[in-house]
Length: 594
Image 1 (cartoon, rainbow, N blue to C red):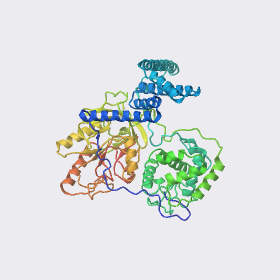
Image 2 (image 1 turned 90 degrees about the vertical axis):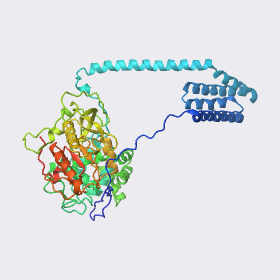
Image 3 (image 1 turned 120 degrees about the vertical axis):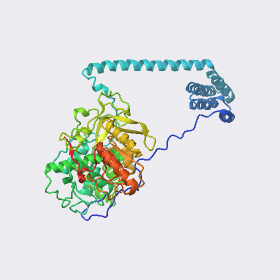
Image 4 (image 1 turned 60 degrees about the horizontal axis):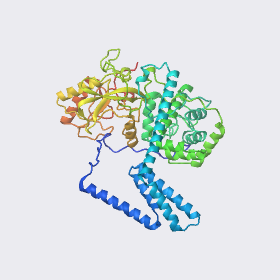
């Protein structure tokens, strides 16, 4: 990130934009070999037996005793999965070694002691001793099983007594944990006298130690002086080529938080403070708190998501200096380290705040509505026990009834209780993400079709009926519709963003994650963001940058999409979605948000 100081340094910490490439390419598939057999397998088995015998003969020759040979044989058996046989040989080896040592201690000669040890070893290798070991193992397993059954029974009785009021509806959900962005607990508001105290309380409430909190804040003081609006160069309009915000996000990271701030707080929050020491006069104390809360929550979200390596490293530190160096090297990656200054800042903040009470933890995201209490389900919880209802989804019109109005409120409701419509197959349930919040949805897979990677074309049950009709109409018109990407799990979006932060939406904020976006293939042009043609559309779509038949085909798909409630992205000509992106950029699209 850019390092903010009284005399701003050159642009630093910029993550370069990716090369032009498809966001989702076909997988390589499983390339495992078939089952072996025949002469080759027999020869391999014979070879292994010869090697085993050779190893045992070498040990016998070197030691003159069967004790060491038994140990080697036991290790080999255990490695092949014969745990009883391995245990028997190891026990035989141990008993023989103890016998040899005991006889030798009496003053008998080494040959006598060795013969006695070999005799005991042979005795322990008999079938009778093997049966004894097997019986002991069976008794141990039976005891463990009995213990588990008893404990489970007692637990069930306790749970049923303590939680008798759990409803049938609440037990229909299979809950899973998903280590997504913003998963750690943290205060749901910022509290304190000044921004430094608010940042300290928030980070401590999020679970960071006093030393780790001081290390993060020592870096923030160097970068921004705790002014969440400061821009490198202090121009009235921030530039993504330079730093902005508490940690001076730069480049593609600047663009991502810019979009996030505008989406959640509004465009009036994205501008530069007059100086590092002055907050914007137009911002009230509540406005400043909202910005501080948002940026601290965003930092934690990055440390738990796309910057998880930095978050894990920070969590391993135990001193103020270690934490300061970790956050600078792994997360800030600033061009001007000024590490001594950062450490001094951190130590001063530690001395000021250490020992103060920590606020009670809350959530890094706003609390969900009661209808969203199943949002703890992870993206991998497909096929859960949620039972679909009898209703299928629909693209509900806006209450105003005005044509072309997008009812975002209806589109973003949980859909796990819906059924998949005709033409699709139930693909289970998952936690899908819209604007950073997870909501339980049902996934439906289009029948008789796959994407270009051979994967099912999967979508949110809410819009499945309209998409099926869109697909059918496209086939009827001979448009040769192909899909390169449909629904993506949260983990998939995290991986895409990590590999191409400038070419993919940040995790939790892509319509692909909510099962309402589709990437269309088959156009001979570069599939890179902002590669738009000159064609103008009323809804300010990114038009296909070509001519002739391909452009006409794109226009037909655009109109067909609008007929069924879908819009082309304003920065990607191939991306069609039910919740239009870029509404803050003047899309000329009427929306209803409730």
